[in-house]
Image (cartoon, protein in one colour):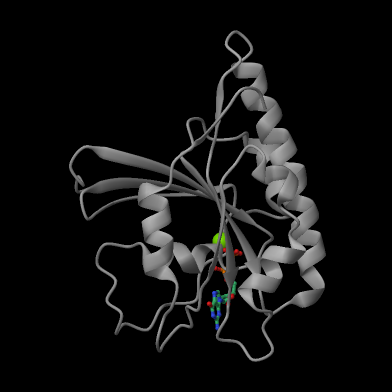
Length: 198
Ligand SMILES: Nc1nc2c(ncn2[C@@H]2O[C@H](COP(=O)(O)OP(=O)(O)O)[C@@H](O)[C@H]2O)c(=O)[nH]1
Ligand SMILES: [Mg+2]
């Protein structure tokens, strides 16, 4: 990998299968031009790991894929350590799956926060990682708006310990893309929330 020059960010990307995780990763390839037609992503098994240096930062992405949803991946492969940002992808074009995604998200956060508490048991100050909810496929007709997805994900409880962002993205295989700069900014610069105890 070509080095970005010192700073490092470790990103965990989760969400239900087919939600658009691999498609997002395709946009964080060093030599992908916006004029290229993006290939159809290959279904991910286990973790798809990808490192890239972009604008002075080394990004390390772990995309959780597999036969079922991300909980399956976490239970079988564990959670990559020292994550800096969690990205949770929700398919905006499948309103009937938002509830399942919300449940999987909250289940995952419970597993993750419990792990953090166990590891931080000696000192009671912990730092909640920032979370980005990505409302993907905004280009598809009839897709649910990002603000509505944010509302339906009911992140209030999680926001007590984590800063939660929402970004709507549109990344069709060809044509204008949207939301990627905002996502890059959050991945590069968002900070942990300091909490007394999770
Ligand atoms: N139109 C459109 N299709 C998308 C977008 N993101 C992903 N897809 C398509 O949705 C399907 C699932 O995407 P993929 O990234 O493989 O999902 P994953 O299982 O979460 O990794 C693929 O056919 C992608 O081409 C998007 O923003 N717009
Ligand atoms: Mg995938």
